[in-house]
Every structure is written in C-alpha cells, then in structure tokens.
Image (cartoon, rainbow, N blue to C red; front, side):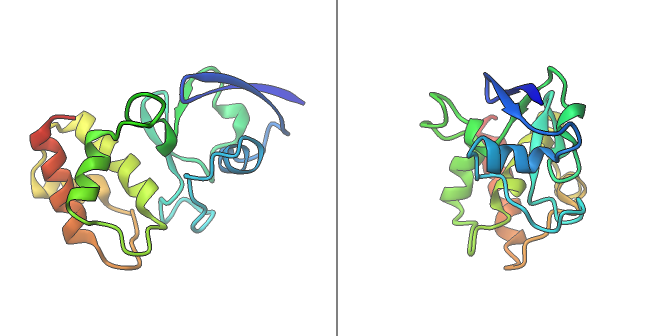
Length: 155
C-alpha cells in the first residue's frame, strides 16, 4: 500500500502497511539509519525523531499516524541537507559526548526539542526534558554540558 510521507523536507512514497512503525519505514524502506532501534517500547528513546516539530518515538508511531506532518530525523538536522551541523550536533562534538554512540541520535533529537521549549534551560529543565533518554555509557554530564553549550550558541 503506497503511503506518502514528508521526511526531512522531501515527500516520499513507501509501500508499507499502515500499522508499520515509523522506525522501520525510516530505516528499512528509506535507508535513513541514523534513527536507532533500542528497546522497541519507547522506554529508551533511542528512536526519537520530530513529527510536526515535536519529539516522538518512531518505534511506537505507526506510519499511518504521521499523516502530512513533517518528520525530521537526525539526518535532517543542520543545513544543506545535513552537511552543516546543527548547533546541538556541534556542541555534542565540542563536548566529546558520545562513547559507543548508539543513543546519540535520540539524545540529540530530544535536546533540540528541549531547546525549542527552553532556549536557556536550567539544569532542572534539562533533567526533566531529557528524562528517559538512556545512555548505557553514562555520558549524562557531558550531555548536559553540550545542551548548555548549544543554548549559549543559540539554537
């Protein structure tokens, strides 16, 4: 069944059942493998993308629920089709956040959503906004530093 989806500013058509999770549409049908599979239950948030400008969990969102809302993935951040880093991505590099890197796309997408709501977040707002994003390597202190750095640079 052909379903139209707007991903990173490009309308694409996919042959997918309506209940197929957005995560698998992105990864398996569109080849956008930046969004990660973590737990499949929206508990680790590795699969975080933006749907209509809001953070959402791709593993639990059926493709039919997206409608004509724009989906932004980690590949769609920044400028020039991702060739220029988004301020949050640049802060991640500057603070040397990732270790294994698996959770980082979801962490970054959550941080971008957080900074849209709180452009100059307090530590408490960061803790609340990033709550549930699991990093098995424990880079939480560097994540917080990167969010503060991005906020100072303007997101």
